[in-house]
Amino acid sequence: MKTTQAMRYAVRLNYGQVNEVAAKSTDRATTRSAALLAALGIGLSSFSMKQMLTKPTKRKL
Image 1 (cartoon, one colour):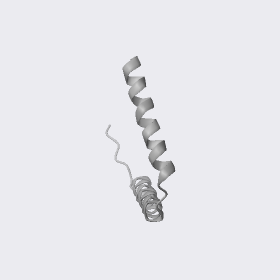
Image 2 (cartoon, helix red, strand yellow):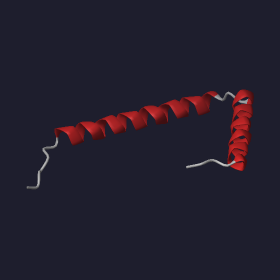
Image 3 (cartoon, helix red, strand yellow):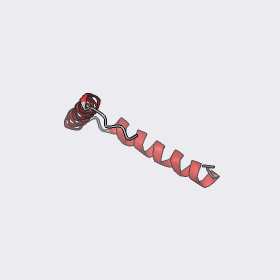
Image 4 (tube, one colour):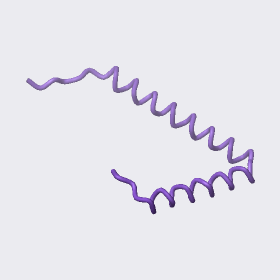
């Protein structure tokens, strides 16, 4: 996909706004909940992969 100059400019604007907000507010509750959700997602993903790998596969001939 070829990016246009307007698209690159929009990405730069969004990235700059995110950095400004992140620099101003460091809320412990937000950081804690984000880490909890990330750990939950990794755990669920690992569990799903384990289930898929232990399940015998049926091959079509």
